[in-house]
Length: 73
Image (tube, rainbow, N blue to C red; front, top):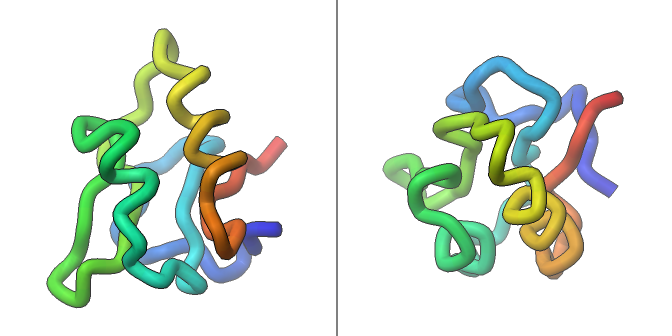
């Protein structure tokens, strides 16, 4: 489960985030490169929140092999 206390520092503000446990597997960035970006170390972060694309966030959350994608309620 993604830890909101370990949010990647480049996440934009909002309920969805990627934490620092990301292993650079490309799953979330393959799902939606418009929403998920990569830093210099290739770790993922949320670059944009799109209200209409909740299904893409949910798919990334379910697909992440290390559960680095999360949502804060």
